[in-house]
Image 1 (cartoon, rainbow, N blue to C red):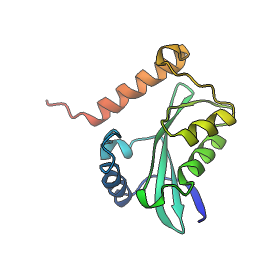
Image 2: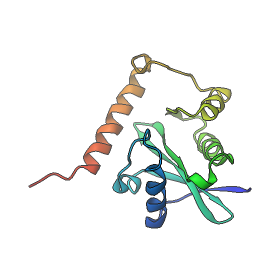
Image 3: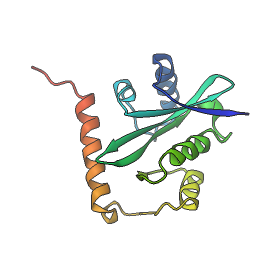
Image 4: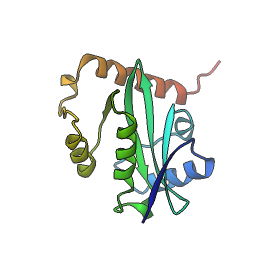
Amino acid sequence: MVVTIIQRKLSQEEITKVLVDIKQFPDLAYIKPTLLTSFSEIYVAEVEGEFAGFCAVETYKGIRKLGPIAVCTRFQKYGVGMALMMKVLEESKGKRTYFGTSNQKIREYGLSVGAVEYRNVWKLPADIKQASVNLILGYLFRSVKLRP
């Protein structure tokens, strides 16, 4: 299985496909479709020309946050998520970058390329905490429709 990673926006069909797949996993957070169109960078994985998953990247004051990352159910366990992370981390070399994951393989890969692991959010460097808070607030305000 050959995985190709391309930086581009997600199509509406791809967004729908990912959202349907995510609903199969009740422990994962729901992502609003509008949020998936607003990330500054999206890396898309394709297998033989078919959409297989994506990794979003947001940047705040020079700090890159990787994720969310999602791989369609039918392509899981074939290294698609790992290929996405490898490409995005390669593109992030020399840039301040962080990500959070519960996926053991991605965690191990991150550590193998020099990532520092923090198991307590309060021990994160102050600029990473600030970037996280600002990105979360940005997500909330982009996805909330205020009444006039």
